[in-house]
Structures are given as C-alpha cells and as structure tokens.
Amino acid sequence: MSTQQLKFERLSTTTTLSGITTLAIVNQSSSNSLTLTISGQSTNITLATGQSLSLSASSGFQLPDIDVSGTSLTADIITSI
Image (tube, rainbow, N blue to C red; front, side, top):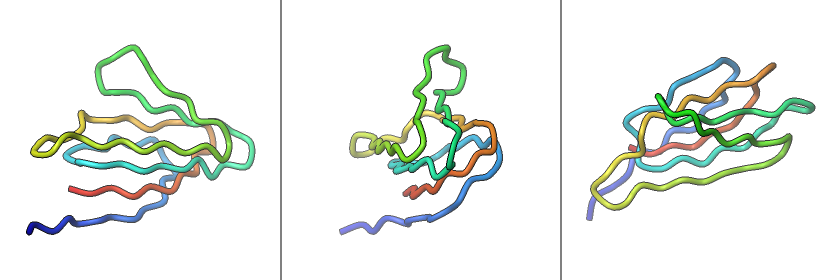
C-alpha cells in the first residue's frame, strides 16, 4: 500500500501549483474572491469568500498545473503528490 505526502499551506501570493494529485482549497479572504486557472487555458473557476473546492486526479495521474490568484489573496490548501 502506497502512502501519500500531504502538504498544508496558506497562500498569500499568486502561485502555480504543479505536480500534485489532489487539491483542497478554501478561500479565507474576508472580502475578496480568488481565481483558479488551468495553466494555459482561458477558462477559470472563481471562489467567493468562504467557498471551497476539491479536485482529484485519476489513479496514476496528476492534475494539470493550476494558477491561484486574487486580490489580497488568503487561501488555505491541502495538496498531495
């Protein structure tokens, strides 16, 4: 049985997440939304204050690179590789 490495982190600047298999993110900003964009794509997901999102790649695969951005960015994330 393989084990996953979990990483807990608070983001406060625009960041690109890469090489991960799962992502859980919560927008902790008191007044600003955050945006998640698949690197190189024009479609994005916006999370309002307090909203969360979880993503998981199929077994044996990784999620594509994900850019996280926002004004006064404050987001808590958990990732695994």
